[in-house]
Image (cartoon, rainbow, N blue to C red; front, side, top):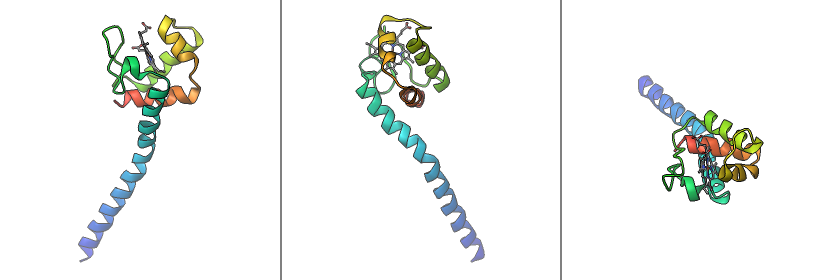
Length: 106
Ligand code: HEC
């Protein structure tokens, strides 16, 4: 009896912990997909981060920190590309954070 109570509380505890861990990830998934659509990223990188044509790089599964840095570089002009420099210009710090984490998780 005591043993099954312990098991039950362990299961409940784990489930609560998992639910708590899920929240930020869900947030990035929802906001990231909405932003990728709003900002037009999906036209070239898809919603899944796979380039929609050979000239558009796959960015899925890339390190979030790497994507973050590249977007900042495009925005500041340190890295230049006709398409991406224009794309990054309109992104806020928060947009860059969310989009980087979103595409890294695809
Ligand atoms: C019209 C097509 C197009 C759109 C729209 C677009 N990209 Fe890109 N993206 C590219 C191309 C082309 C490159 C490669 C540029 C280069 O050579 O530096 C690139 C490169 C990148 C890179 C760097 C990849 C690497 O491996 O270094 C990131 C990150 C990125 N895009 C994110 C985004 C995000 C986020 C958006 C939306 C805000 C977006 N892109 C919108 C075409 C596009």
